[in-house]
Every structure is written in structure tokens, then in C-alpha cells.
Amino acid sequence: MLDHPVSALRFTRLLLTGAAGNLGQALRPRLKAYCGTLRVSDLNEMAAASEGEEVVQAPLEDRSRVQSLLEGVDAVVHMGGVSTEQPWEPILAGNIVGMVNLYEAARLQGVRRIVFASSNHVTGFYRQDEVIGPRTAPRPDGFYGLSKAFGEDLAQLYWDRWGIETVSLRIGSSFPEPRDRRMLATWLSHDDLERLVVAALTAPIVGHSIIYGMSDNQATWWDNTAARHIGYRPRDSSDRFREAVESRQPTIDVNDPAARFQGGAFVKAAPHG
Image (cartoon, rainbow, N blue to C red; front, side, top):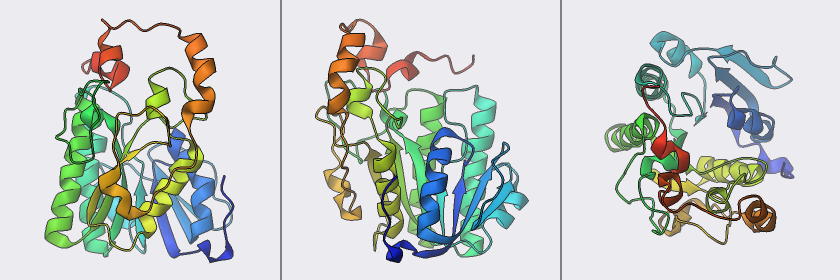
């Protein structure tokens, strides 16, 4: 967790959706340093509210609940919805209907900025021997990636038509440390995740920006040059884990689609399973 200056308080009330998920749990104690009140929400049960927090359990597909959820909010960090490859029905509810509900609520409640947890799986069917950028055309690797591509398009619509700014974060692999050789390229430390979200919240002008969520890894498939205007500068790197990861996984089967494509195992996941 980063050290925070006294001047870090920049918002009266922030909303963090998906607060019960892995990244939501990582961000919840961190985001409190940047706001007077942190409102946290999820479909599932969450830890009780501590000082300076409001806890609201609400499904994203419930339009009226989402309308109330965004009342009095300055900005949204949207980590909610389905975060893995799943059958279509829950993805439709959380990532399609829920996304529309969120942006409609933002429009009606006057919320001007959203940080949207998109995913690297929007472009999962590009090869691992390619380097792509934020404006490279989507090639989703499943229903999950497809839903995140929809979310990015929706964010673009609400910027173009209603002036709601969004930074869409194509998050790589955000864990305490990389688990395999793929993650040496996709890893995003939790400290860099905080830096990325705060930069997305506080950059003066973002319009609709797309940026890959990764640390300063030596090997990477993503070029974030076009998104440097938000001021994100990663400070961590997967390189200190390289020796241990490569010793655990000394060889790669180049005939395995998970080793050829950037989406890894997601390119083989059964969306109807």
C-alpha cells in the first residue's frame, strides 16, 4: 500500500463496485485515502462498514438499485460484474445490462467520471509474438472479453453523447506475484493497480481513454504510449520473480493455444460450460 500525503483527499464520495471481488478487496482500503466517504457495493456480502465507509449490497442488473447507488457520488471505480469466462446469462446480467444501468445512473445522477475495469481479454486472440496498443481492434477470446468490448463501446457512447469521461482499464493479471510465464508479461502489482486507478480518477482530461493495466515488466505485449496522458507510471516489475517462475515452468508447449495467444487459458475456456 502506498504512502498518502494529506492532500490525497480529492473526492467527497467515491463508489467502488465489485468490492467483494479480489481486486475490489485490494482497492477498498486503498481508495479510502482519496475520499471523505467510500461507498462500496457488490452482489455478494462484504465486510461491515468501517469509519468513512458506506456498504450497499446491490445487483447491477437492478436498475432502480443502481440509480440509488450512484446518488451523491463524485466518481465511480467500476470493478463489478462477472470477472471470468462464464455462461452467457450471468455475463449478460452483470456485464451488459449492469453496465447500461451504471452509465444511465451516472447520466441521471450527474456523475462525470468512471474508471471501468475492462480486461486484456478484449484482445485475447492476438498472438503473444505481437505488440498491440489501446486502439488496436478488439479480438475477444470469449463471452467475457466480448462483454468488456461492449463496455468500452458503451463508455465511448456516453462520452460522445453525454460527456461522461471514462478510463477503460484493460487489466492484465493483478495478483501479489505472477503465477506463470504468461504473467511475466501481464502482471500488475496491487500497488501499481492503485497508481493506475488514482491516475485515471485524477487526470485533468481523459475523454474516453483506454489503457492496459500492467506493471513495468521487461517483456510485454502491450504498448501504452497512446495513454500516457493520464499520468500513470508503474514502479513495480515482474522481473524479480522471473527466475522462480521459469524454474517452475521451464518449457512452453508452442502448440498449445494458451501459449500462442495473449488471452492464455481463456482462449480455450468453454463459454457454455
